[in-house]
Length: 159
Image 1 (tube, rainbow, N blue to C red):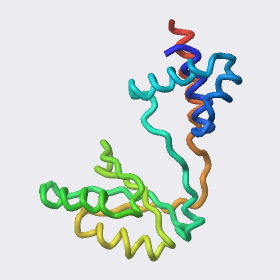
Image 2: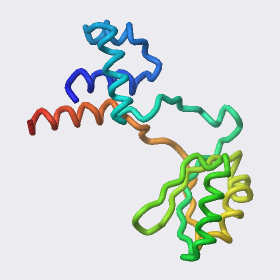
Image 3: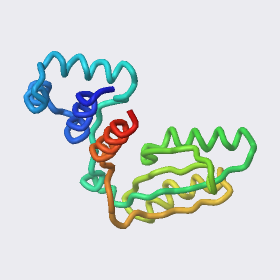
Image 4: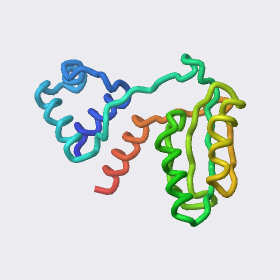
């Protein structure tokens, strides 16, 4: 990874739909070079996917929450829990963790009652307790461009 790779990633982190032509102009390199670099970044797994961020509130899903849980050691219960995570569309993300909880999920619902009835209640028999935090406001969104600049600066100091 060199400076050009970092600059490409920074541009893509701001706009995943950036055109190669516009990126080439901004970075003062050939468009084919941008294309080859992005292709290589995808191939080596640095770029995992190109995606969008959806405002679920526009669809009436106004309650976003993090739900933390532990589960019994019984494999069938764990399997049912994982199956619920995978099949429930309002579970946007589920992670296995090391710490106070085994699993942390991010879920979205119409309102707190919908969250309770549609996600919390089905989870209760599969878990050893739930801890739910409803998001009231966002303080900071992912800022990949800043993190890329910090990594790039650290690499310069080291190497």
